[in-house]
View 1 (cartoon, rainbow, N blue to C red):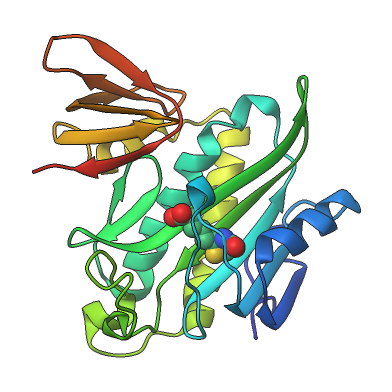
View 2 (view 1 turned 90 degrees about the horizontal axis):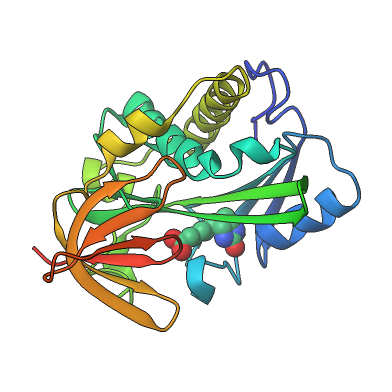
Length: 251
Ligand code: BTN
């Protein structure tokens, strides 16, 4: 895949390891990170046979989709912003390459017309205040006839389904890497992604069901805090902070 040639980044994507088929890019990225891979190393799979999603779910990524993981070594101060960074980079790249508008469903699913087009999984190794590494895994349904996958077809879409034509996976990946680096450098220079991320959330103001651990809360998604957590107003007026979880839109 012609990813690195003349890629306009300083470090992100300057080393790409490509596998036509792989169990999960997360596993290879973790091994690379443990062996001291440079910041910005990217693992890309043509297809994944055991892709992983959030909350121990499986992630379907047959050929035609984009599946990649990026190794980062951020300061601990930016850890909670990486969710915002990854989802905003995807939203920007989808629009740049295809013209399609997408939204973010808290915490970091990317939707087009209410259906999921991209999932993001972040795994990290943090000891005390030291971040050994973070792996940002991104899966985008690019050229995928979602109707062929009944398990996901009611809730998922792809760029090709939305456009009615195929999209260059290489263009999507190159744009994504450039955008991720731009936002990462912005963050490191003291910038904030919070406002734009908050304003891109389709979740706020909506009635939702939020599952976190064994608990399920229903209420209205009122706001998000700067650390990325969701504030949910219950029917009794109480406010619950959801740090990790999953929301279903009820309206
Ligand atoms: C989710 O929505 O649950 C997150 C899905 C994350 C999928 C990506 S695809 C690339 C990377 N490798 C994986 O096994 N998972 C992530």
